[in-house]
Every structure is written in structure tokens, then in C-alpha cells.
Image (cartoon, rainbow, N blue to C red; front, side):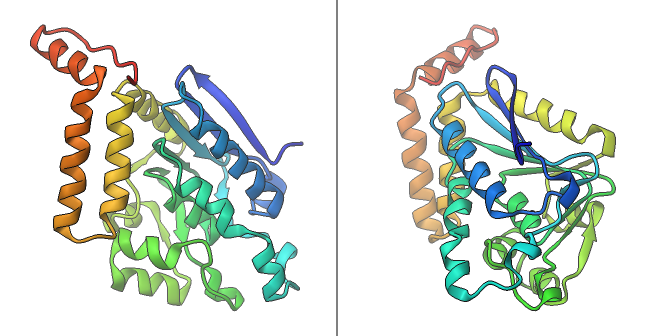
Length: 256
């Protein structure tokens, strides 16, 4: 049985499901490698305009598979190439939506943090719980969590292993939306369809500038925004979008 499932619910949408229910979708090397492979493939597939990643109705991902790494040495951990697998997700140019039911803990929370939008069920829980087992986050949480919710809230979560519920996560700015548990995936897919109807080049530029701008000065970020804005005026979608607005009709974007 494949530990990650790839589905295509519509022409422009890809749905990735974590599929280790017996292990609460714990992230072992096999799962990380297949997840990375799918993101690389989808990133190079022009027809795909949005990617949704989810677990199942009970759990998103409970963290790293501790049984796999408990006796590992530092060299063995380095050779697992976890950072490489994570980079294929964080480097994906397509918008990513995480649809979270149940728990997203440790590496599971870090996986969600790699998404651009997080839709969570009312009973979903988030936490960086690595400190409880004698280590610290190794998949980006010390950097991404701070950028998402600020130093002081992030420090509390990182240093205590605190688990927070979806409504609190929403108020902290950690997630995008809270919906009933039974509507998480459908809400995420509806949102993906809405994004997929937008001009793909503009969506790609928005993601690139937002992420790149987070690590530079305001002036540099504004320059990146201006350049990307200007570049889009060479696209057919810009002409289509503006003419459709003037002509009072719905635009049809092709990604050109």
C-alpha cells in the first residue's frame, strides 16, 4: 500500500493524501521521499494550478516516525536527507493548501507550515512537540513558526511542546481558516478551485514575491513586487483580465 496517494479531483487540482493510518501518518523516510517526488512532478506539470495536501479524517500527521530514528547517529540523520525532501515542498512554485483534520504535531506541523494556506477543522490541533522527546524541530519550525506568529508565541510553543487547538491557532495567525471537521477537505478543494481560476502567472509571482520578500528589507521587497507587477504586463492573461473587466465578462486565464 502506497504511503502517499496522488489524486486529481479536477483538471487543474492535485490532491496529495498521507496514507499511513496505522502510524497516524508519521513521517518516515519512505513517506518523505514519495511526498518529495510528487511535489517535484506536480511543480513541473503546467496543467496543475493548485495542490492540496491532507491526511485523513482523524489525523493530518502526528510527527516524525520515532521508531525509525530513535537509535540514529548524527551522521545517519544527515544521510536521511530530510532537508532535501522539505525543500522540494517549500520550493514548489504552485500554491499549496494544507487541509488539516486531527493533529498536526512536530514534523506534521512543519509540513503544514510549508503550505501557503492552512484550512483546519474545529477540533484540529497543532504543536511543535519535539522538545518532549529530547530534541528540537528539524524541519523548519524554528524559522517558519516565528515568521508566522512572532517570536514570543513561537518560543512558548517550541520550548514547552504546547499543543493548541484550531480556534487559538487562527487567532495567532498560524492558520487561514477554521471550518467544521466534516468540511475540511471540501473547503480546501473549493478554495483550490477558486485559485485555479485565477491567472497562473500572477499567482506564481505573488507566491514568489511574498516568500522572497520575507527575508529582505522593505525597500528590496517593494522592488521585487514592482518588478513582478511590471513583468505580468507581458502576459496574455493581463490583457485578457483587463479587457474582460472592461467588457463586463468573465475572464478565461490560460497561464500565458
